[in-house]
Image 1 (spheres, rainbow over the protein chains, first blue to last red):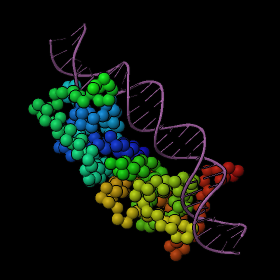
Image 2 (image 1 turned 90 degrees about the vertical axis):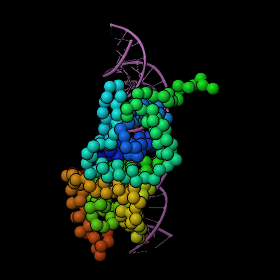
Image 3 (image 1 turned 180 degrees about the vertical axis):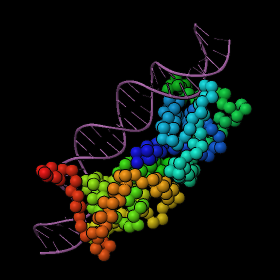
Length: 131
Length: 131
DNA sequence: ATTATGTATGCTAGATAGCGCATATGTGCA
DNA sequence: TGCACATATGCGCTATCTAGCATACATAAT
């Protein structure tokens, strides 16, 4: 049962559900920096959450140069497929809409379908001295 | 999203998954003492876990005299129904088989389909002075 | 009323999780 | 070989979770 508990634990977090929602509602794999900018969360946090999701078998990662593209698992088992379907069935919230809007803006900056930028957001701490 | 996180948190525990598995695989509502004996866990723990599951909308409770019978929700929303289906899809482990065996033994002691006993198990601490 | 009993809850300690921060790792390019 | 940059990780802190224990609550029987 432990494997299932791990999956549920991975899903029991707001930020990770936001990540999954983006992956579920956008038909594309996403790199860490695109997710970081979309969620407006610090890069190190997004990276950690991605690791947890991956270890739980809920996403997959593919490296391409300096970038790592994350996507839903190709052939998830029945259990995980059911979980992902459940997450997909949740009606969109304001926050999810905003995340998706941010993401679409970021994706529009791709070149040949590939991300060519890093994190633009530079979240909390980065603009301590901003007006 | 918080409501969903609460549901996933409720599922992210071994004992609670065992409870759900019993409810999913036995076609009957179950009272606290039957679950306590089946899981061989202390009564206060089972009670706490039941509360968490109920607050998450994953089980329902019905009081009848001194007994409280728990069952799967009558009409769960799509999200929760999907989650419960996922839990049901998990192949049975040794432990789950044992739980079910214990439960069937307990259920066979019912009278007119009702539980007439309390906790027989009297788990850890209860038999400190036992041989 | 008082007692017996099924169930629930308050409290504490130990374990675990997530954030913020600094920094490491690894890849591509000059 | 060294720099730039996307991503990952180790550490300290705080918050949250769960088991264990004692006990409270509620209902039924005497």
